[in-house]
Image (cartoon, rainbow, N blue to C red):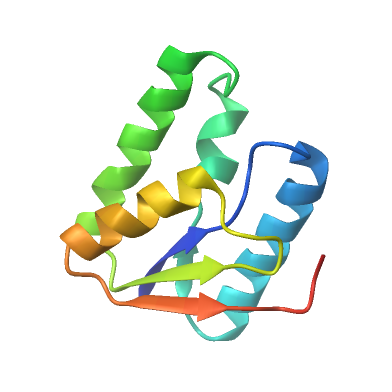
Length: 104
């Protein structure tokens, strides 16, 4: 099962990256194949530059067409970027699963 991971990124980036990694591990332990574009694309794009941020977000949204689930990890809240991802998932007909891993 290919799973899109939604978790916060902006704000306290170090803490949010740690949380996203924990979310990925949780998904892997469930036997899923998780994808977190905010962890991948921010390694080569600068999130603080609007054009690069939008490029990464748009590329990440393309994966929704092959995913089977959108997992929203919400221990640290639901950010505006996550809400945008949820809207895209719903438009793509993906089921949404809200998860907590006891973090934050």
